[in-house]
Length: 300
Image (cartoon, rainbow, N blue to C red):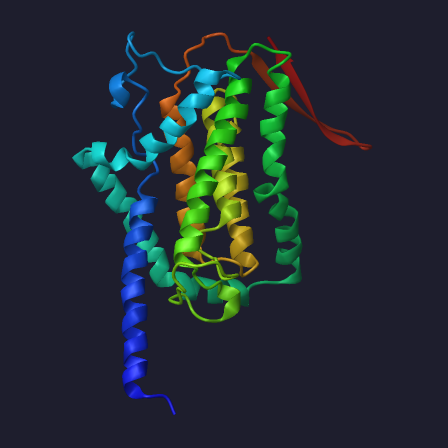
């Protein structure tokens, strides 16, 4: 027989953990859309000056040395936030908290409508949050050796930096929280706390990676029609795939999306584009009775 005091104590601990994690979700979710300082004098925020120019993105020692500084600028960003930044953070955090409250309902609805068809669709989408992430980054790195379009090398290096930074944040959050996955049937409010277990649901690594990469592609190639909708659309499908597979709660994928997006936006602001020599990319679909393909032409 379970002692009543023990039961009450357990519920009190879960309630306390809920509140702590809700605050954590709101704080981490606030990164998206908030300004990060460009490299400036004495590491201060603001626009780069002549005395302290922006570190140029490239295969150089100076860029490599700037990466730890970038990480610190992102982590310490809240101390430089304005009142408007904090209001935006509160709004984003409120969305995460609301989703947390509806996690169980969303999971129930999704699993009730899950079918063999949605599972086949999810299987096709899954690689876009895993191995396919490397394709645009490696491709851009290779293209930078045959073209002087700075967006290629920026896509490769800033994409890699953003991915590594956001995944480091994701890994730390999972180790600290150890939230039970929806497939465990332990409920949305079950958090194991710091440790290394298989129950690491909060947030989603695949969604973090997908939105991190999507944001860099959307920002670097914003002049290419459809770049942003396609990039964010694919990343959103990855988020839906994780919910369909019963691997993550809705609040997990939301927090992951905000984390990947926010880190990449911050990295972009820390290394603003300075070159005006941009190449031209033309993407033309080819559909015939015998083949379906894309023709990609790079002019430089």
